[in-house]
Amino acid sequence: MSFKSPFPDVEIPNLSVYDFLFGSVDPAEEARPALIDGASGAVTTYQGLIAQINGVAGALAARGLAVGEVVGLHSPNVPAFASVFHGILRAGGVATTINALYTAEDIAKQLTDSKAKFLFTVSPLLPQAKAAAAQVGIADANVIVLDGAEGHPSLKDLLTEGAPAPEVSFDPATQLAVLPYSSGTTGRPKGVMLTHRNLVANVCQINPRMGISGDDKLLAVLPFFHIYGMTVLLNAALRNRAALVTMPKFDLVEFLKIVSEQRCTYVFIAPPVAVALAKHPLIDQYDLSSVHSIFSGAAPLDQELGKAVANRLGCRVRQGYGMSEMSPVSHAIPFDRDDIALDSVGPTIANMECKLVDPGTGEEIEQPTEGVSAPGELWCKGPNIMAGYLGNDEATAETLDAEGYLHTGDIATVDSEGVVTIVDRMKELIKYKGYQVPPAELEALLLTHPQIADAAVIGVLDEEGEEVPKAFVVKQQGAELDEAAVIAFVAERVSPHKKVRKVEFIDLVPKSAAGKILRKDLRAAEAGK
Ligand code: 4UU
Image (cartoon, rainbow, N blue to C red):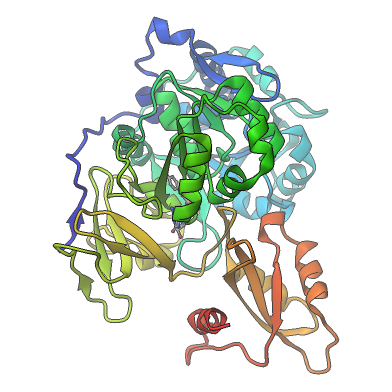
């Protein structure tokens, strides 16, 4: 038996993301701040944001963007991100958001795979963006630099053209809105096909649980390019007419300064920030009394750590769980429930049902009538589940079953009340500070080293309890190679979050008869150390 959300179903309107978020903005809401640049304090009102969204949509349509065509968006969190993101969707385009830490190689791969026609970036990231665009044949005139750069149109150029937003018509239930990249349960990053309906649904599903209101000022330091920031910040916050205070990257002092100066009320984080909030002496030097809630997701939150943050800041702490393939949220501790353990991810959100399946036997694990169930792989079904992976039917079939359940690759338990706790991850994926690190990519790179005969990469916990990528390396015979050399070799070739941070030399990578790396053996050996 599957277990259903304990909450009643919510209605999901059949609207495009733009119509859902901005179709009903009333005159009183137009003057409210939608985005505040954390560094400068510059405000974009809802009216200003809507005008910019339509301006971007018009400029893209005038340049020939057709419904269903893909646009790359490669930028850290700045207010203009929202105008461009929603402008692309408003024009019927599909936004493929690109990690701001990516190398030119990573960017080129995503642009090629998604067949992007245009690329938006910012001047500090232009060298890698330009190299990638050149590699895939996107002309300079179609590489738009938000803050301007010689030889490229800027956002201002697009907006001053004054082209009207196009009249587009599409079915929100099937029309793709975004293509974030995720490695899913195995292999390289793949385009996750999320429709307008998927995104609208997830906002409707989480809205009653997260308690974001028009009076809130949310700190937007979690990247908008990642699905967590995209849905919870760019979509849910704007739907509720809250204000988003943007920060392009995490820096503790800057973070504390902005929260206290802007009087932020609701702060969305990944667990590494919780560590700083619980322990760092600097925290006491800032007035953080405006914060009523901290919400953590993207990696496991420790219960004691969560409690320490709540006590120190005198605020609510909540945890949610999600996955790009689920738009992303499937579980969240409701804002109005103080009694749910902080190391759980709460009950299943509305309109969803789940199963726990024993990965060894394939048998379903029953929800207990009292206590906690045995662990099993979490499968989820609902209107927020992706349409599939772009151009990869095989990966889609491995992840989405015939009944519509998404196999998350995470191991969880459920209790009699329906509260789910994530206890392990069976898939390959490594999370470094909440960012995805696909081990397959690092293994392929390690194999290009002339002195490496074979390699496997898994996630291990470092001294602070944070997950980091560790490489198990088999040297070529007679090779002179040490840990530092392997770390440096990878670091020179990948974006910073994908660096290998630990290395162990072994004689043989454990593999199945079919040649698949037996990561679980490496993980078991690691756990026994
Ligand atoms: C243990 O990380 C995400 C989405 C995170 C998210 C978003 C909105 C969390 C709460 C929320 O409200 O997506 P991906 O695709 O980058 O990574 C998905 C994987 C999961 O399969 C799981 O392994 O990240 C891990 N993960 C978590 N693990 C995500 N959240 C959690 C969590 N505890 N709370």
